[in-house]
Length: 470
Image 1: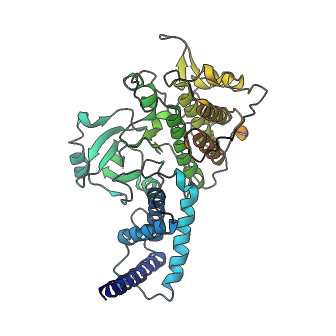
Image 2: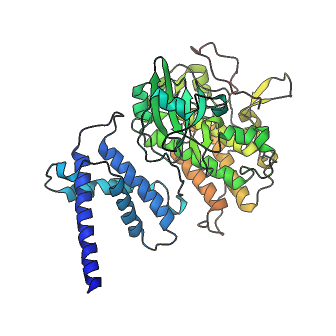
């Protein structure tokens, strides 16, 4: 009898929760009121469900035979986090279930960007917290009055970075001197992807602007690859080919989101190893949207002022100011070559005053000649058979990314497919032992143009040059 009563109560609770949930969703759909960031409530709701489905499915799939259980957990999370108005204040709707039916499948379809087996849960206290405007006093307190001890080096394009801790315990990175205005903040704070560093806040104090980002515990990929204090450690996490391939894959997913799924589409314009950060679980996140270009049509060409970093800019942009999504592809290609070789984007012929030359010119010819092993970073050690196969894919992808002719470069969708395959070969249990991926490299030598690093006559503002000293 007690069991029957309990069962009846549980069913009643479920019914009430389902009805309340559908009313909340319906209210969010009908609401035309945007937040101060310009984000609609239904967009926020979809993000909540999408992220919940991703994280729940990734964590439960190994123990639960049914993905429906994961969805149920995700919906429960969405219910608890929904910011809808009290149910008593919601307008009467003829069919809240219909609204629910249209909202949840939309969120679920977005969650299928990667197979469930490849999704990971990355704990981060700043995720799912709405971006907001901070006061100067809040950020001053968070950084101990912007103490030099809180300073983060090589952080941000225009400003200075500080590590901070908010009153709610969240760790953040605060950039002083940002070029963002409120309109840019409204756009970039809506970006929501596990391979992007989230913009969680903004502050204006007189003539100074500050941006607040998620804090990335393991810092810049550039430092992990090139800083002597990191690379000399035998225990470095990056002294693993599997990890380097995963970082490449992570970064490609973030850029793919900017090009194909952000609304409006975004060209980053400054993809480089110092704009790829590593969080506490060594997941790579694309960072720094200070130079980013918001484009209504991602496939079009735009004539823009030349801004970027030497060694990562593609020839057509550096010489003529022609900006397309393929400029990001080129920058990513250079980063892939950094991961393969362990060398900087700009090399010196000697330790002193030798003329600089580009990593592209150093690495591409040996790869085309079939001598990939000659340029691999010796600190990582020789790859095993699976890793060697995966590195061939990575190298082939890299040289296609840095083709001189933009039309010959792959799209970000193509790159994600290739790097996903590479990561699966060397690190996924789904990989078939009998499967072999053979690469047909071009038989001809690519005619890669060598940009003149001193040719800045067409630049209206200074071009940023990477510091080659650690």
